[in-house]
Structure formats: C-alpha cells, structure tokens
Length: 455
Image (cartoon, rainbow, N blue to C red; front, side, top):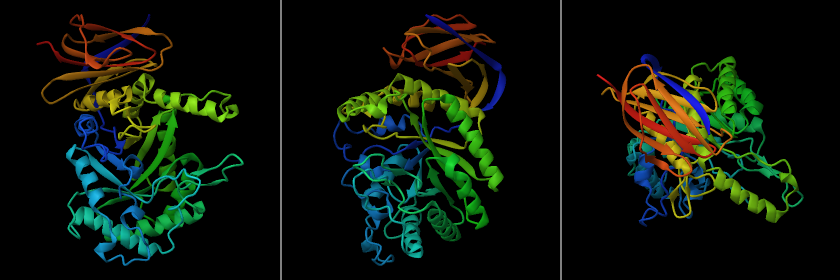
C-alpha cells in the first residue's frame, strides 16, 4: 500500500477557489420523458458555471438544435421572416439547461462532421446575410424577438476547430471536419462576423474560434484579429490528453501568446478537454476488428476512475494558472465522451465532476500542500464550514492511503470516497483532531472531506 501526505493550513488564507468547472452540453432532450433518461437533477448537482453548446444535434438526434443551419436551414430565405427559423427545440434545450443553474455559451456555427460526405462546412457565401441570421438568433434568445426569450446569454462563440481536417487512408480522402476552406479565409470570416455582431451587441462577449491546435494556428489567428481590429473578448481552444502537466502548461503558453498578440484583456477558455487513455504504440497496425475492440475499451476507460482523478487534478492545478474557464467535453449523454454509460448510468467521470462542483461551494481557499500524483484543494464558506478535495491520479498500485494533517484541530463531519468500490459515497472514518487517514482501492482515487474547526 502506497502512502501519501496532504497538509492543510486552515489558518493560512490562499485566495479564492475559482469556479472554472465549465462543461459542454446539457441533459439529453430525447430521453427526458423516460424515468431512466431524465438527468436534469444529476446535471444540476454538478454545479457547472457555464455550459457550452457544441455538437448538440448528435446527443439529440432529429432535433433542430443550436447550429445555424439547424435553426435557419436555407440561406437563400428571407432572414427577416420568422417562419424561416426553427427555434422551438433550441428554446426548450437552453431553458432546461438554465433551470439547472448554469449559464450558457452559445456556439454560432456547425457541429463536427465525421461522415463520408460533409454537408454544412462550406464557408458562408454571404457573410452579411450570415451575420443577419446570427443577430436574429441572439435577439430571439436575449431580447424576446419573435416570441423569444430573455435568457441573457452573455458568451457567443464563433465556430469550432476551423483547422480540423481528417483522412489518412486510401478509402477516405483528406477532407474537412469543421471548415471547408483555408485558415486565411476563416480568419477573414471571423473578423467580419465578430465585428458586425459586436457593433450590434457591444454589451455581449464575442469570441472564438475553439482551435483544436492552438499552438499551430492560434498565433496567426490572433495577429490577424489584431491587425484588422476585430473584437475578441475571449479566445477558446481545446486539448485532449492524459497529462495534468500538459493541461497546466498549455494555458500558460496560450496566455502568453494572447498577450503578445495584443489581447491581454481577452479571457482564455479551454472549452473542450477530456481524459485520453494512452494509445498503444502499435495502434496504426490494428485491423478494423481490433480497432473496434480497442476503441470500445478506450471509451470505457475515458470515463473511468483515472478520468475522474485527472479532471479533479487538472482543475486543481488550474487554480494557479491563467485560465478563465474550462469546458469538460461532455457533460451530456452516453456517447463516447459523455459522463454516462448504458442507460444513463453515472460513470466515475460524473462523480469526479460532482466532487469538484462541491468544493467550489467553499470559495475561500486555504493553503494546502501535496505532491504529484496527489492534488489537493481546500476552502471554507461564509458559515465557517470547510471542505477538502483530494485526487490521486495513477499512483501505480492497487491500493493506497492518504494521511491528511491539519495545522489546527478540526471536527470531521463526513468523508465521501470515489474509488473502485465507492461512487462518491460516505464512508466510515477514524480521525484525530489534527489528522485523518483515508484508504482507497484502485490506481486512482478521489475523496471529499467536510469539516469544521474545533472551538
């Protein structure tokens, strides 16, 4: 059994615990009518501050959701005729999400396309017309236009991963997944659309474009925006990895790139990220059948205990990094990157997100010390109640113990454990006024402690 140490200094303030635990996608609409598929209460329990709307049609088949061509299918139609828009389903989808206590980032553009043929990725021929449609979507959602709403959606993101192209075998030619044009054409499109929307809605946050490879194409995009005086209230990018250090280091690098390009005040959102189990070195030599078996196992692991520990570790590391918001992909359904399996069974990833959603309810941070693979975050609320979140990420053994020590006497109220045999459940514990041992099973683990100082 490996042993680890966490030291908590309740008497030493540590600033604020930042609520950077954003997500992608809300409760699935198509399943909500069934008792097993209504995940609204579970979604609300995650305590997510911002939910990004990207790829919503994939988790909600046959629904006209979010994407510009889903709401306004024919760009040859009159943009000022409300009969040419399909708002109802997106209205309900956003309404459900807002009722769960989270705000929304609305992604203007299209969902990713993986099929043999791509249908919605051509650059808009008439940017002025496209801007008029986007403006009417904003007015409907925020200003009540055409029997609309006052959702007060603040963040409006333009596009997603314009550099995302695919195709690496003879049967599938190299083709776009998100933008069927050059990056130069996209940068020009962004500047025109962002400029128009910002002139119409100066009080809103306009940004993008969710680069999947920010270190390859972010600098050119940022410099183009600056040169053309385009608004960029927030810059969004993505990363998929199994390395806490990579997630931490990336935001420092991107922040520096943004500052040097002339956007020191723009927010940085890493609004797609997810645990990626390591790929085996011989993966390219797999047969089709072998790849299918591998990917089935891969997607199971990507929602497992290592994932839960990593996501808590990453958001703990981000507390001291220059990032304004994360966006776990996804906080929606049962798909490969979802937080449910089977018939909406919460996975360890769900419970890891729930644990972090709980620690941010204790926003006054107190000093905590630990060493990798252990990450710890502690805080207190206005009522004087304290909490400690500890994640142990891939420690290399099948069991472990964390010895938590406190600099002042405390009374432990409860301990919730996520490991191979517990799903963030309350467990029995034996504690001293200045210490608490927690045992767990598995290569990774997460636990949440709630306590109060002794009088």
